[in-house]
Image (cartoon, rainbow, N blue to C red; front, side):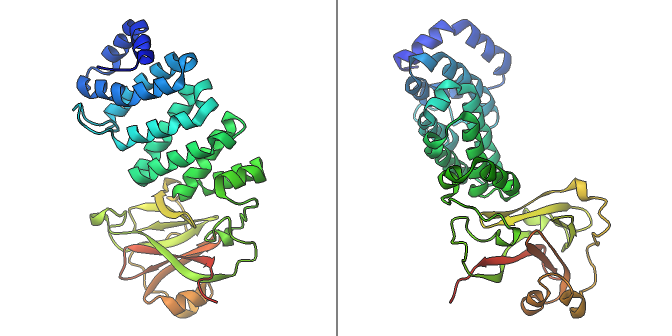
Length: 331
């Protein structure tokens, strides 16, 4: 396996302990695939880290490879094979983490890998790689490793993890204007719930309009959570949807919309069962966003609002419509 002199020196010095690691944790893995991972991914990163951090970077990447190969994040053992999207993203990003990476390679590498895997599962490889690249791009502007990790969270929210909104806004508020500018492109971020569908870098007086923003959920047979058309309810400041079996919480803002399991809401008395009768218009009118719902939806079975947005279900759909205030698209 041809590798750089720097990586070769580490492998030779740590041969016995690395072999023990592989024997203990890699016995069910493809040795050829692991060796190719070391050649095309670990080697360039160890070389980029420099002599001072080479050994710790090498052992961190060795251990990471064992886990990544098991999870399908590493490419094939074919010498002519291309690196996986995960491998390519790591090689492109980690050297740009500069002092944060070389001073604490285990912490930063694991954070990068865990973040990539989370976004890959939640979204896809493309957006996970874009997140990692964006995180590396702001590393130079982060004064500490803690600030870098907070930046990773904010950028994950920006990449589409709508459920990270509350934590991300807390990070921005705590870190201040410079941090907000680096991560979101805005000196001041309007955190009001009713502005959740307006870009953070929009002017404070940006005109807004009520709109049907997107749909979430879907039929279980096509990858959605619901067997039959669901209904929605507000539980505190959150919106939940259920079809009588699946129970999910809705997250939506300008960066994305997602549904996640919500077992904590199982006992919510406000939840209605699927198959509920169509709501009467006078009942809808009394609820938040009622006039808009009456104008834009038919055969409504439930409406709920909380946290600056509304959710609407109809008798003929397994989806939940999300309604909120967005930047006005016309004069």
